[in-house]
Picture 1 (cartoon, rainbow, N blue to C red):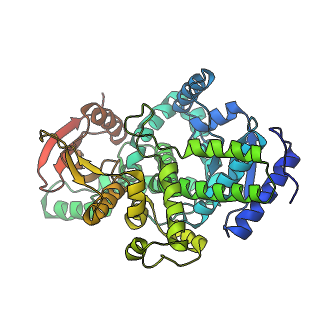
Picture 2 (picture 1 turned 90 degrees about the vertical axis):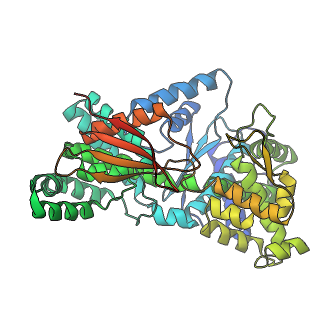
Picture 3 (picture 1 turned 135 degrees about the vertical axis):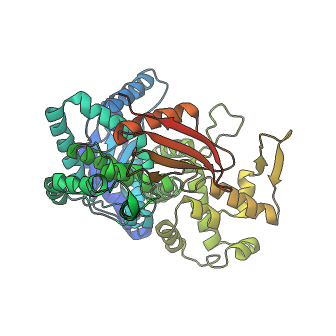
Length: 504
């Protein structure tokens, strides 16, 4: 029996180091996790609130919305209505894990297992993060972004920069590419690109707006050529504005680019919430259980851990006041455990549904392959088992606006299992919660009116108020009239049009 890593709640930095070393041994040698080097930062509750408000990224530029979120989080926290996360982890190389100094020694062990090894392994190995992010360059880029925006505030005024950031933040969900090539964001490259910005901007402006002939065949050919250069339709609205908006100054284009790249950096996390939390939760459970079995943490500490773990993976029922949909920790953890069960102790049903992994015998090899090669929608579509569907008591109810009654679409039978899995997976598809809005046309030779289409699925058009607010920001950046048309995705029929003109 090995010596305890700690006794009671108190810890010192020496204790923290011993905990880290013990967790690392289990993570590396028993689970075979592959991680970035770790950097553990101990912070106060107020610093954790500050990290909440600025999306967890260090060195982020200033904006009033961060302060507003800080005040909101602080109010509910001080009133005792909400606790704080035990950790925040950043996809960087080295991987940065923030832990609160108020945590007990047990919770510090849990945080290190969960964030510094579970999330860290997922960040390093999942194909979404490998394709979309550059962990070794993000901290340098954030430093560049913070300094650049601060210099803009000094030069052009805080109010002017704030208005630009307001508009950019409003359009940030439509400022990502779905299929980009990875572009490393190093500080050196950004400084070089910044020096060339004005020359590039002026050239692009000339090509697009000043060389359009007034009329005739030459005008048509020139416009067709320039439309091709614009690569319409274009789903990344911030990118389009950054490159082609007629009235934006060089520094404004650069600020749009900063917001766009930071939004792009977080895009993989939106697609892997269930998998990422499931991976981290499964890893911390295995690590903490191993430490307990090896005599490194006491029964009391393990009970404290189990209390926190159970609260994290609790799935409220639909009638529970706390219900807020599917808990990604609960679904992710249960699916990881279920995959391990199928690999080690499959039933005949499992062998029929999962012939490639049933009885394979090495659950960590299978799980690491899954963590590397799937995102939430494909993960659920491939690995949600009939066993887990029954355990969760899932069924599919269709609620149609024009139908007098609800309809039970899928139950627990062969066809129902397939339908349930497909239906739940569709809730996690990339464009499910973000409207599909694309720039489709621009009047280059005349009014410079910009036309966008929102592809409408199942009759779900945009909220009028939200559409008006977004259009207001869009017209402020574009500088001319903007038309947003609601287009049925099946028939291409225009259902509704929103029109906005810039304020005088």
